[in-house]
Image (cartoon, rainbow, N blue to C red; front, side, top):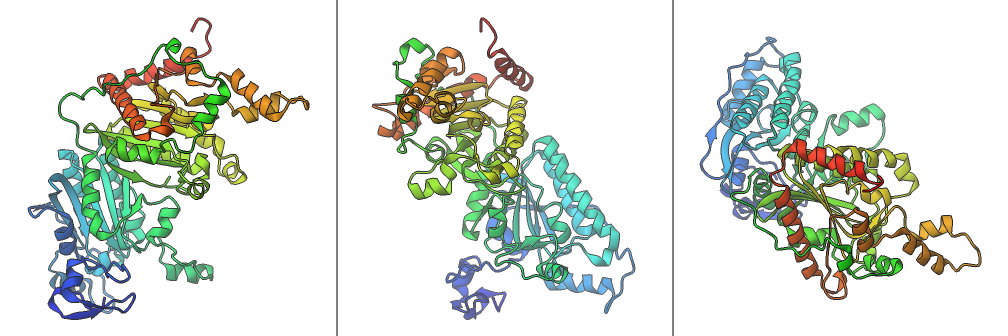
Length: 555
């Protein structure tokens, strides 16, 4: 925008679309253009007023060195500091506070780009470390709102060392199991991006925010190439798995409040779900293998995102593997099940054909399994249970998936889940295809819907390998393979693969999705209640013993 005090002027012009906007309306819109959605920069006081409850207290910090290098360019460094303080009415480029969002307490550090470009100097580093220390002592979530051009050159190597100081402060919060969140705003570059801005558990970004280590001008001059459109924007980074979500400014406060709820432990004893889980195979109807496969593959069955919406309160989807991408064939996030924070992760096939193609029919590439692993590690840090929903034909068998290490990603999940120190409940809601399903299936309790299937290979794949008689019709061979694999829920319960089967209503989950979701909710609630008093070491030992027994004579 061309003016920075919109409430004090009549009209102003948007720097993005050049639309004229009434100043007071612009202020009410939190300085977001109502025509094009451009998010203009906020000062630290404006950001605090937008996000936090009215009453907050500043966090004190130790004194730091003043002008350590005796720096002079066109002006002495002390003069630049004095001017920045007079212009912004702040003593440094960050404001640290103890406050609350929607009544949920937290500690926060909010940067202000007006103060020497939000540069990271010793004053900023010490203030952020002191705020993190307070969050650690009081076990409060820590929020960082970043806006910076990078390290403060006038303080030389001492400025550089603040990257380590702040990273160590966040590492201490990780070790203590304290939730950390960053809100990346425009711009966030250099030493800030390469330290505390990108280390938190959850990374949110405002639309259009630019984030990176080197600025685009430096990159273009170095590689002598034109950068792609949208390079280093929040949207660009979301697609590549580096941020959890891009959130419009008016929705930020509510989203942050939901995330803070994940650090809130439930009060009182968890209620029973009143489930009707079947544990005796004889009480389940016998069904031919191919019939079970067809029912499990019905496109009308509830999807993971539908389970998340109706199973949990305040579900917040999280994105990205922080490495290479964000597969939409696996979805996951934090929500509350009967007031208990849980991490829900599952395969997502989608509903219609267009969405199914976009989600690769629920067949995840390595980035999907790595995203699931990241979310499981976050659940372990926050000491919250993990619930997985399995519904996939298998892992992505494509060339690109192999190039990016599909086998390595699946193997890592098997190892990770085997040692995860929190309760894990897995539910096979449709297809459980091979290692692509098992990568979410190493659990303390494994349940399945009554029309679900779980197998080492698809019936079609099995038939193609073992039923090769050219005189046998392919459909007949597939049916024989499905029967031989004993992949139905009834068979799996008899083999001890499942702990229980959740009966589907009517003719199947596809005929009554909401009743199905409610039955899954009750079963998962009861399973988590049963596991709630089991300690981490006992959980891990029991989980490992469970899988150690499979295939032993007499088991």
